[in-house]
Structures are given as structure tokens and as C-alpha cells.
Length: 363
Image (cartoon, rainbow, N blue to C red; front, top):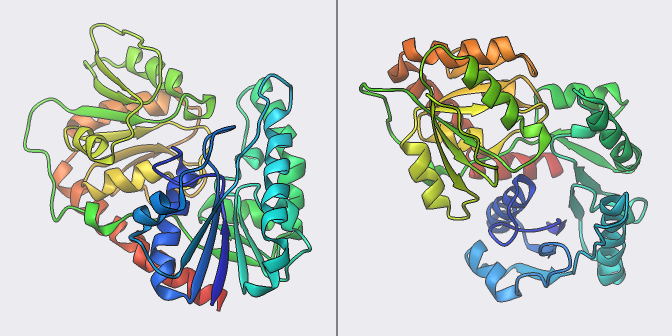
């Protein structure tokens, strides 16, 4: 099988869940197929990583080709991201249009498949978290999601197949009338899974990992911490402004690109907190579970496929009361039990299995 894989960036050159997903999917699909051509970009208006640098990340496979295209954007204009996404997709199409028939499938991440609609009879689109169709918790957020909904709907309706990461995301697609759905969850590299990990005593420490976006709901987490009767120790990874909440202990690390450093902080923590208002299947949850950590997360996207009362606490999005109660509950949690449940669960989501299952679906 020959696959054209198009994405708006590859990790570690561009930081983000889709970019991490793209890198790992290509890396693990490559040994299973005849050929993959990867089309990608760097950060907006920046030159993409070189072919040699990208191939090194994949392990230098001989059957992977790489084409870099600049993602041009003018952020000073309203609606700039949608226009830039369409233009980027069109530029991808122009660069490969004369070779489309060579590929058996086109796998398109995010909005990249826009210009390929109707141009190939097997276009697979993955809009990941489908955030534009998830519940909004403020008027500005609702208006922002509405601006993305038209383009997302067009891609979903016109693609040959649509990827669902699972959970509530499948329900969203079914509600939109989509029938040709391929269930393909996010994954974790099995090298990160520990044989065992458990807390032996001492103060419970929490970790939050996320970009500075409203949907990540970090300010909401701060409110919950302020309401906690127990002193909370929290490690924060991401470009968030430092908010002090005495007597609670918050340590801010800023944005971290080193995966080893991120796992070092996760290992030093006991509980990952994901209070997001909308999500797909967060990589950070898979990573924390791989290290045997308990999880507090909102029931959005495909999170319920990972988090349960066995691995932590699943809470209603936007519920300050439930988040505060979940944080306090961790002081009486049996971490030996949650640790084993987390590592057992995440073993089902290793990338080798995800790639193999996707290929079976495509065939």
C-alpha cells in the first residue's frame, strides 16, 4: 500500500497533539506499507524542517519521502487561521496533484484535506478532537467554534472516510450523519510504559500540562485549588503566566520541548489533572498513564475510553465542585491500585497496535 500523509507539522519541530500524532503514526506505519509520502510544514511563515532531519526522527526508513511546504499566515487579520489553512491545503495539493493517482490512500490531518476533496476516491480525514462541535462555555468560545464549523463540516461530509479517536467523538460524527467512520485512537510509544509505579507515602503532588488556550481551562483549575481545604502541590508545564495561590505550592516550568524532561516531571508527580472543556484523546493522559499515574480529567472527546474510577476520576466539564472534590479525593486514593490500572489500560494503545489496526481498516 502507498499512502500520502499530509499534516500541519511534525513533532518535535512543531509542538502539538496533532503534530505528535502525525510523527508517531508515520513512524509506525512505515514498516507496514510499501511507501509513505509525508507533506508537512513548520511554524507559520517558517521554513519546514529538512528532509534529512525529518527522516532521522522516523528512524531513516528507505520507503518514506518528505515534502515541506510553508504555512503562510497573516495573524493581524480576522479569520486569518481559516484562510491560512485553506491556502496551505491548496499549496499542498499543487505540489502533489500530478502524482495523486499513485497513492492508494490520502491520510489528512486537521484541515489539510480541504483542497483534496473530490480529487481522490480514498481520502481519510482526521479532525481529531472535533472541538468546533463540542459544547461551548462562553459566548466568545461559541463564536470562535462557529467560524471553524463550516469548513470542518465540509471536510467531514466530503471525505471518503473520517477518523474517530473514540468515545463521544464517534457520537458527534454519527450525529452529523457520517457513516464511513474508522475508529483509530491516539497512541503511546511502548518504551515509555513502566512495569510498575506506585506512591509510597508523603504529600500528593499534581501536574498540569497544556498550551495556553482557553479550552485547557487552567484558570478553572486555579479556582478549584483555591477552594481546596488541603494544601495542593502542583507542577505546571506550558506557557502560562505565573499565578501564586498561597498557601498552595505551584511550580511553573514554562514550555518544555524535551520529552525526557516532561517525563521527569510526570514521574515526580502523582496525579495528572486535565480540566479541559474540549479535547480529542489527549497525549498527556496516555503519557501519564504510561508512568502509572492517576488521572483527573473531564468527560470530553475520547477521554472516557481512558479514564474511569479505576484509573482516577472522570468529571463533568465546567464543574468547579466536581474538580475540587476530585482533587481532595486524591488524598485518600490507593495509588498502587490506580497505578496498575493505568499501565494495564494504556498497554492497549501502543503505537504498534494503533498502526496495525488502522492499516487493517484501510485494507
